[in-house]
Structure formats: structure tokens, C-alpha cells
Image (cartoon, rainbow over all chains, first blue to last red; front, top):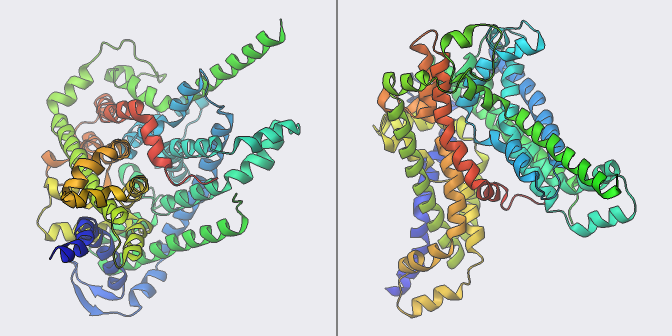
Length: 287
Length: 278
């Protein structure tokens, strides 16, 4: 009896985590994948097998390509700028000093700001007549209601909210570098730029790749700010893939297409992760 | 000027410049806070101002606490953050305990099954979870609000990393003395894991305080809204409500900033734990 309880004990301890993950991660994942091959009624019930019909309909829909384009455009603007800016901030942050505690906190404080709060504050900043951005730069742009500027404006807000985490992450990576490597560079008289380019960057490349991966994934599934600020508009210029998926499901009860779209997003996220993993293996320096 | 004073001058100057850059970076926060102390006329008269005439104008704050359900929203968010964090701690502690103190069939498989859940983006499966929760009949309840947040693979991973450093022999010795595994977990392992529990609690609390999408979907009764959802819905009430909206945003932001400031060290440690290679 004692032996038996000892045998099942570890499973009992794992049960809460496994049940919850099963019910709220793996079950919805499986249901999305399977559902993408079925016709689904407006209450979310599977009705009949549809083969690839949902996908064919999705891929022949112009709106899908527009959403894909918007999402990729956001990703291309978002990822390099966030990594570049946070890297710059991390490189100018020295070892611990009197000032460093203050500016480090200031550099990463945006991390505590939620998407909703950031959205509301930037809505004021971007306000065409009352906002400070137009007035400081002498512009007259309706940032959030102009087809050309709405998506870049959303990207700017997200860069601001993501900057803190990337900065902290890269600063930690740089501080963790082996001191002797950096010192030997100093002894050999490498300049600051050379030291950064030839020694620090290659050494922290795993961290850079990690950020590239997580930021790409979060850009790929970008939706919250769209819901808060633009609802996909104006003229569909801020409609992202996941926003389109929500719209299909909630406003049109079109679950078949929504699931197919969900699977396309899963595949792209997975593709990004595999790509990232392979690049990491090939070109990243490990000690 | 001697070389030393020159060096310290450039050091101080550099430091001050970086602090100035930092202030520029948090400008949106300062701007939002400034607006929350302005009356409608001050906000709408050009040119746009950053700082209010005086910080004594509290009308916006009074408005949101007397004319909206702000207090209720705050309470809801507090409850969701606390309950969710407790759930995450329980699942992380029990799962890590199994991984660290037992040998059993399928151990590796189950570990990777848990880690693998991080590959599935939550916002992409939220649809199906919404259907599940509405079918369970727990829409507009606290259980519905927190149920998808009771487990977090990353926290299980962090907890396990920390627990691995505890000697396994401790468990065997305790069992020999007739101490049950559950008691061993509660009275020995948990007290020894206090640092990681602190880290997880703080970063989880801020994370849950800031969630937006799920409470938006799962609540349609106003009194069940969290503060993040609440502030995005205030503007539908009145046209010229910029000031109150900014006040509400500041109220929503305040707890997150305070916790972040006092626990930056812990949160940073948690966020970078195990992931920093370089």
C-alpha cells in the first residue's frame, strides 16, 4: 500500500498543472486545429467535415492578405527598432554607479505600463488638435485615423511598452559576460566601438536571438492595441491577423474561417521559432 | 584642471545625460499624470501643456470615484491578481516538487509537455477558451476571470530550477522520520523556496493586474470589469472626458508602478532567470 502511494504521489502533485494546461492550452489548440477542417455552426458546434474548404476560402479572401500584410509590416517596423533601441540603452548603461540605479529604473519603467493605459495615454499624445506630438513637431497629422499613419502609430506605442523588458534583458546579458574577456580586450587596446562590435555583440548574440524570437511572436499575434484604439480601421489599415480572427468569430460567428486563420498563425509562429532555433545553432557563439 | 577632476566631471555629466534620457523615455507617463490634474478648459486650450497649473485640481479623480465604478474595478483587479497568483504558485510548487523529488515514468515527457505549452500563444487560443468558459457557465464570475491564469509554464520552470538546488536526501530523511510528503513540502520546501516565491508573486501580480483581453471577453456585466477594461470604456460615457480618463489611467497605473519600483530587482531576476545565456 505504501509503495503504491509512493508510486502515484508524483502524478498527484502534477495533476493540477496538467489538468489546467490540458483544458486551457492543449484542448483549445487541438480544437482549433481540428475545427479548421470542419464546418462549424454559429454556436461553435461542429457540423460536417469540410476538408480543406475553410483554408481554400481563407486563402482566396483578399482581407486575409491585407491582414497578413499589416501584421508583417508591424513586425518589420517593431522588431529591429525595439532591439536596436534597447541595445543602445544597454550599451550606454555602465556597471553599477551612482546614477545607474536611477536611469536603469527610468529606462525600464514602461514595463509596468499595461497596454490599456499606454493606449489611453498615447491616444492623447497623438490627438491631432490637443496632443503634444503634432504641436511640438509642427505637424498636422490625424495619427490614429489616417490610413498611412495609424499602423506605425500603434507600432510606436508597442515599441515603447516592450523597450523596458528588452533593455533589462540585454543589460543582464552584458553584465553576465565573463570579465576576463572584456579586460583582455582593454589590455589589447581595443576601442570602445571595436570592443562592442567584435566582442560584446557576438557574445550576447544568443540573447539578441531570443529577443528577436519573442518580439516576432508577439508582433505576429498583435491585437490588443487594435481593439483599444482603432478596431482595425481606418479602412482596414490596422487590421491584424488575430484581430481579423476575433472579428470573424465574435461579430460574424464564422468559426470555421476563424479556426483556419488561427492555424495559419500557429504555423507561422512555429516557423519563426524553428527558424530562430536554427539560426541560433548556426551562427551564435557559445562558450 | 587635474586629470582626475576632469574624469569625474565627464562621468557626472554622462550620468546626468543618461538620467535626462530616462526622463524623456518616461515622458508619456509624466504627460498622462499631468493631464489628470487639468480641467477640461486647460486641456483643450492650445497650446498643449504637459504640467498642470496646479496639482490641486482633483476634480477628475473625484469624478471617477464618485461617478464611475472605479473602486469596484480596482477591487476586481486586486482579487483577480491575488487569486491568479495564488493559483500559479500552487501549481508551480506542486509540479516542481514532483519533478525535483521523485523519479517516475514519463517524467521527461511530462516536463516537455508543460514547457511546450509556452509555444502556443495565448491570444490565439483565447477564442476556444471563451467558448469553454461560457459553456461552463462561469462568465462574469471571478472563477471565469482567473481560471485560465492558474498555471504558467514559465513559473513552473523557474520554480523547478530553484528547487533543484535543494538536496534530495532531505526528502528521504523526512520520509524516514515518518513525515508525509505533503507535510515535507509545506514545512520544509516552501520555506526554503521563499526567494523564488517572492519573485514569481511580484511579477505575476503585475502581469495579472495588467491583463486586458480575457476580462474584456469574459465580462459583460459592468460590476465585473477589471480596471484595465474599465478605463478603455470610460470614454463612451461623456464627450469631453479626457481629464477623468487620464485620472483613471493613472489610478490603474499607480499600483503597477509602485510594485515595480519596490521589487524591480526581483522582477528583473525572474524575467531573466534561466533565459540569459551569453
